[in-house]
Length: 116
Image (tube, rainbow, N blue to C red):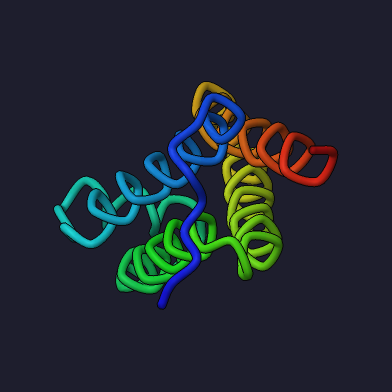
């Protein structure tokens, strides 16, 4: 019924990216006070953590379904670029590495999937 990616060495980057987005979704969906305050500090409304959680969960699902992999990469990349821009605009440079690592992981997964 569903065409999931296989559990193979060539899919490690994709699976790690999906897991990272799933973890991000869980953290943002928790809506803890520190999470809400961080979103506000970066210029978003406090409830934007819930929207981000939905988008991150959707990204994780799209990444592991072979027909929607490219859409997952595009959505995840948009989320991470927006996060990087928001963090830089707020001057919180110590928070730049996590979304940058997520983005690089997505780029790596895309490169591997599209060249094999």
